[in-house]
Length: 256
Image 1 (spheres, rainbow, N blue to C red):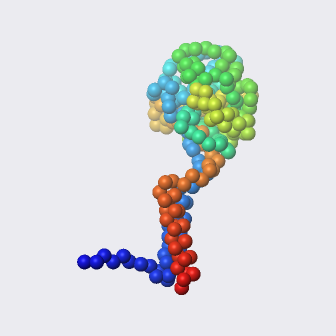
Image 2 (image 1 turned 135 degrees about the vertical axis):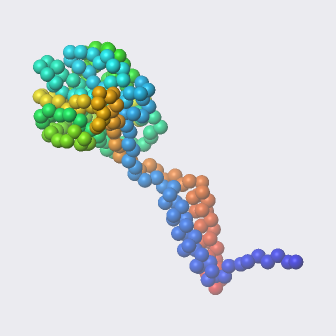
Image 3 (image 1 turned 90 degrees about the vertical axis):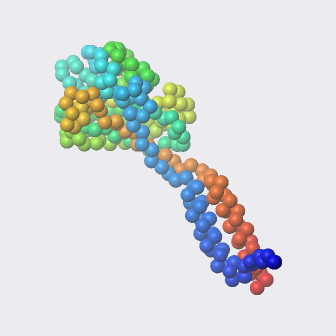
């Protein structure tokens, strides 16, 4: 019994080439990374298991509940000011940040407030430790001073609203610097109200809960730059096959 090896005619090769090139195109399209959106939350990589990486500091008292991740911010009473912090894990994140916005649920608000976000020199672990009854005027001051990440006027609205704040170029620079030099692996920032009013009050209670210490995670949404195209092994093999097909077709056409 003889073996017969099928052969393509010139016409068959001409038909096969576009189909093969289409497969190559589809394969490489999957391998080329696109500009992406990354969502980080304060519930990821919890420093204290069971509590989100967020909280408050007061000008007059300490937070003595290690699991109270309320982040009330503003002037709550005469001489009683609260500032808040948020820490986001950057573990396994690579690339360049092109844009960033922080998304926070409004909860309870009094009056129109001017909310500012700031850098902080405190580590995420140091911020979390303030919920152990640590009264720290230094960290309190730090959460509302230094490098501004943006200032926003917030009018009153529904307590379940998710407020989105686009952070400025200084914040993007800090994020990219942190990605280059991870440090403690977190990006932390402070929040303070400039003037009267407050917001995020009762942020330790979910809708329908009563007195619970549960809090919806707050989010940092990052727009990441498109990375350099790196073909996947399967796509690279497909590309090589396509080039071979194209070369074969060219030779067949020249003989036809």
